[in-house]
Image (cartoon, rainbow, N blue to C red; front, top):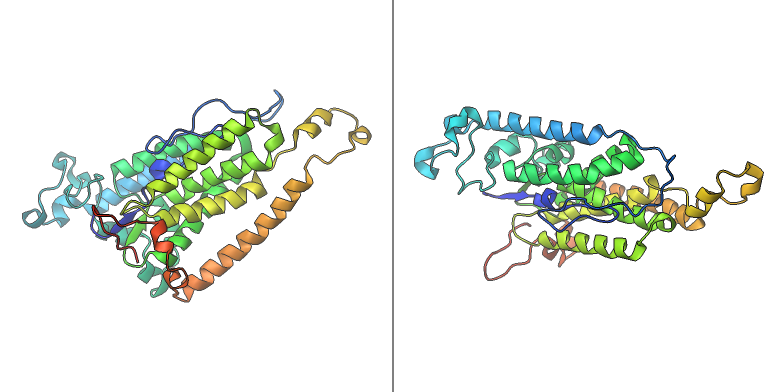
Length: 335
């Protein structure tokens, strides 16, 4: 669809313990391998449903602004799809096969674009693009993934931690995407969703002792992650947003999703003087500290490079293959 890089990432991100099924149904499923006592607090999930409502509402606004019957020249590119919807009707499928608006509408409302961010100082696009979607298919895939992934995480860890991971992962994905994608625009919540997937992986690792079926959970989750990332090498999919979001969420998981370990769970009903062990392990403290350092350094370096207008491809000649691998069937033009 035009020159748009759809972070159709949303359709494919999940994680959990045990992790969700493969892409296109990258939804979190199955029972949790957590060790959990009946007294463990369960949060009520309200943030994730609110994010879903906000994204749906924003898509309706996008379509109203797009107003295909009024702004589209049907004599040149064909008729709008579902014209009975009036202002909400979609662009011709040749232009947008995802049943959505035009590229120009997305750009006007905050799509991620290198020139706008760097040359016109519109850094707010690093955040606004997370709330835009290229079409109904893109929106449904992302929101279904968010529901299956996010609600469970919010129930386990609360809205504050999940909200921080979601937002910062989305921004991290936007930064990496803008450093490497120069000629296209990008929209979608997939970077944020990949962040939740990364957080699930680090949460499994840092809370290893409280899991049952550890190896199965880890292998399944890693397979899901690899499949989801592999989908990103297709054209028009912004895999840099996926990777940036995943790495951000992975590091944040070590910081925000740390749990008391099994041995401490066993001792916590004893008198304080009889416990004798910290509720957290040295391993957890080490990864917490290292992750904080890497997060600060990564965001600082990324933002400085971005605001200076540097092209990430100049520093990594092969990195463009991470987002699109050219074949005899398609070409890549994401630089």
